[in-house]
Structures are given as structure tokens and as C-alpha cells.
Image (cartoon, rainbow, N blue to C red; front, side):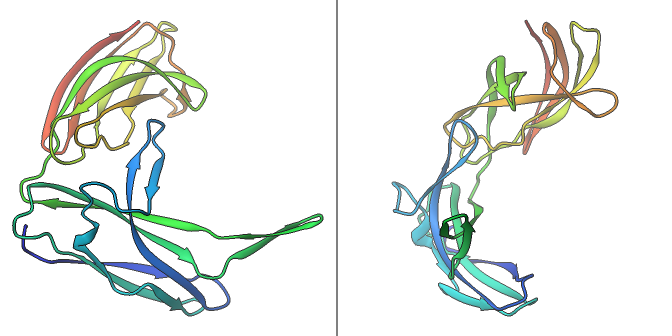
Length: 225
């Protein structure tokens, strides 16, 4: 709620044989058209990162040990209803060294923990703008182009099925990619056969069932030519 502080804890485990040091900081992020996260270390417009406080910037975790790391979010009392989104970046303080014939190259890994915080009345409002086909992992699959007019992200789920032009009875599952407020995102419908194997459907195919998301439910029937 606006004006209230919310504390969260994450647990870091070091499975190595020696102590490890990690650096922490926050970042803004966006989701590209290909579903990859884009990290922005500089403060973005309307960022809620000024509301975020992390426990400390540098920690050390003993070999085989665990560390509970705290952060908190404090929306101001006049914060508008919606969704605060940011990432907590975790990096190794000492880079590993990858070596090959004639070279030695320092390599530093980074993990981004994506955080969503609902402020006030925040919920998605999803609608299917159009349908079509898209490429995913080298296959042509049916897709839903989903618009979110709400003030929080949403993810499609549901139970869908259909028979393609090859006569195969298939089950379809929507991608779990989030649809952020104000955006239209292509959501692939992945097909599996009765042996739970991924297959490429042969159009035309009519897909029926029910789509669901947090706070929403929609009967669905669509022919994909």
C-alpha cells in the first residue's frame, strides 16, 4: 500500500569450495520484442527505484554457506495505483578466468532478480487484439497478440486443444511471457501431441478452450489459416 514499507528476503547459496564475494545493486528493465530482458543501470523515466533500499552493496558468502539478503520498498503516500518493477543485480566481485590456446580472458557473470510490487489497486486487463503465426525456436506456431490496458503485468494460462490439417489431436499452451501495462505482446501457443512431445502444427487449425490470467477468464475459439 502507498505509504507502507514492504520488506523482502532472498537467499544466496555458495556451492563452491572457497568463499565468494558478490556485489548488489538495483536496475530498471524492459522486455524486448524477442522476450529478452533489457537492463538499464541508469535511472529511467517514472522509475520506482528511488523507493528501493538494499541491505548492502558487497557481501561475502563462505564456502558451502548461505546468506539471507534483505531489501525493502517504500512507496510514498501519494503514489498512484499501479505496479513498481525493478531488478536486483547480483555480480561476482572477482571475475573468473576463461583460458584457451594463446589467451586468458576474465569473465564476470551477472544474475538479475526481477521484482514486481503491486501498489494500491493494481491488476492486468488483457484482451486479444489479433491472432496469427510466428516463429519460435525454428518452428512456425500460432500466436495471440495480447494488449494490456490495465496497470499491472499479466500472464496468460489456460487449457486449449485442436486438430491440425495432418489430423493430429494437439494440446496448446500459451507462453508465460509477461504482458506489461500499455504494451501489445505476441504470445506463442506451443503445441504438444498425446505423448507430450513438442510438434509444429500444420495449418489450418482451430483452437478451442479457455484462457485465464490473474483476475480474468475468456472462452476462446479461433481458426488459424
